[in-house]
Amino acid sequence: MKAKDVFTPGRYPTVTFVDEHLKEKEKQLRNAIDTGGLLVSISGPSKSGKTVFVERCLGKENLLQITGAGIESAAELWLRVFDLIGTPVAVTKAASESNERITSQSGGVSGNAIIAKGKVDIALSQKHSTSSNESASQAIDPLQLLIRELKGTGMVVFIDDFHYIPSKIQAELAKQIKEAIRNDVIFITASVPYHSDDALRGNPDLHGRVSMIDFDYWDTNALKKIALKGFQELNIIERESVISALASEAAGSPQLMQFLCLNSCFELNVRERSNTPVDFIHDDALFEKICRMTATSADYGSVVDKMKDGPKTRGSNRNIYQTKLGWKGDVYRLLVKALSLDPPTLTFRYNSLIERISSICAEDSPSGSSVTNACLHTAQIVNDMIPAVVVEWDVDNDVFDIRDPYFLFYLPWADAVDG
Image (cartoon, rainbow, N blue to C red; front, side, top):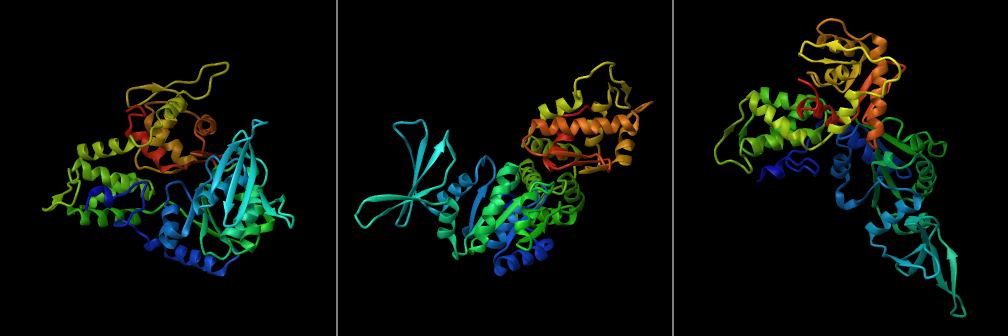
């Protein structure tokens, strides 16, 4: 057994799958599927195991798995499904116009759709023979073709990363999904938890038709089980101090835990099961090397640089503070450093954030209003640079949330912040 097949970041884990803490969620998912007529809406933080959960519960062979990334119309989403179920789709150029024409066939049904600039704009249309053997056309909605293909088959349309779909398209999809589930087509959507799927959960037409399953980041005990299972398989002697340190760095993400464990194996030169036990002793230099290697899997360097610079100043210059670490910086530079301090934390409340910043400063420290203002602008900077909500500043409650564990992990381990 090779290490890369034991610890599988980004792939389905077989040896190191952990689900003891998900049994109730699995029961809820199966109940919703068996009930029928329900949309299953799974919401949870990035890298919290939503996709693997669905694959494990239902089996990849029963899923028509598509992503919301890049979807710009409802019909475009259905065409991705048609591609998975084997409905042939061909694209040809119309001679008299710059538009593309899509033709599709399913069984004895053939159709076409006009695509302007590569995007689906109108419905499929079916051609059928008349009594005089002449060809006639009849408009067919792609949704109706989807229902015809999947009704009662037991196959599950799994729309991952639903939050990437523009809100206007989400609203349209909500209406169409309602019609599909009424016709015995099974749907699951997965998204992140900050208002991204309100078009589904908050849609009046879907009230009573949505089964909501909410994920959270994993606790350290669940993450430790990943390491325990994998290290035992590879004949690595697991030590509690090492496993606890890895679980702490993983920031609640099973995917990140898989990555840290795999890189631990590489650094121990255990690329497949060892014939003799390998002792994984806690060594600071080794641990730092493992973490720095893992940090290369997510490059947020340019984002962090922008965070430290802050927005362009207007009028007077910002106050500069002397730190205990030997460098000087303004409130933005101090904020980035504070976010990177141990212990790793995904949610920072006002008091704890002020305490972290004060602990860095040698003398004076920024005022509370200065810190909250920096939090607001920092969140805007990050989310403007990345096509997802990576951090969020809750103005009403003065809470700074980091939504991506990889981003939190990157801060202290990729030389992204000052020492």
